[in-house]
Image (cartoon, rainbow over all chains, first blue to last red; front, side, top):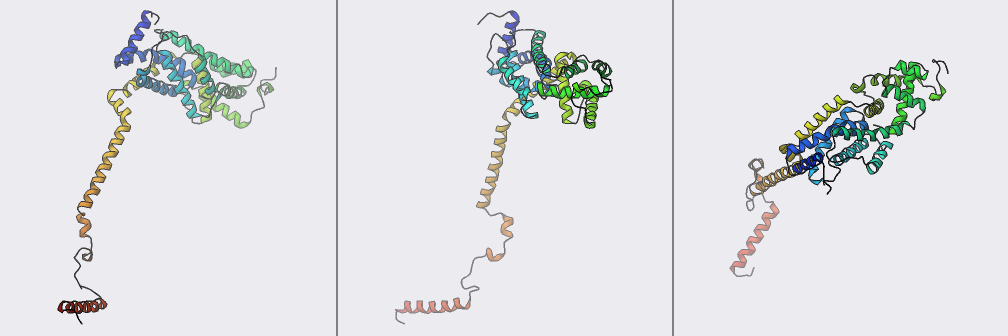
Length: 195
Length: 162
């Protein structure tokens, strides 16, 4: 096995202790992954904060139940628990809607995308890498929209500008801007997937 | 550029009054941000799409920190040894409980075969319980048969011939 840096070695020690039933080690291990999972893996794929929190709880619970099955690799603990989270997000989507393009994207992503995690990585780095994956998915979906719809979403949702400003930029009334945004989000839902 | 009061054909067909109303309702929920709780499933899905875009492009640090702490605490609570045993073994426990109930039921049934329930026996009319007496309540034809049978037996015991 390749030698690990001190942070990676510490993570491996926590994993081994957790697998021997040390609940403090398990708690510390999960505490390190909980926030990146929520902020960068689950919430950007689900949207609703309450649903994302439920999925995170179930992810952590499942990780606890199956910690004995985890086999250490140089990538560390996060990719394993991340895969649990992505699977639960897919289950959540399946429960809430018929098969969508989002689900197909998730499944492709689960097979294709391998973020560059390594054992002992800082939470912030993990979050940044995961956010980059989510951002690529979103940009890909936005690129499929009518340019004016895309601009409506960018201005109102991403830049959080007022309706009046957004309407002025697109040269429409505020009422018409509401309709454009409604259509834009409907189109994005189809491109990006529902929920 | 068209007048601001005109509908721009680049934005698709002109909206119906229903679409305008839906768009207004969606905007009202979007304005509430993370606190939005629409009841209409269609609006909920669109709000969630908007929240996904926001979560992807704008980290919500305070929300993430609080939510991940709550979820971790809930998971640890649910995984406490007692809860874990209960959660993982509930199927076994249910099977054991069912077997216990079955055993008690079978036991009670067995006892009912060994000894008739008092209450049930007491409820029967005497005709079902008392011993049947010879000739008691017999029909006249039976009594005639009894006389012939008695004569035959007496002659047989005397030596045979009628």
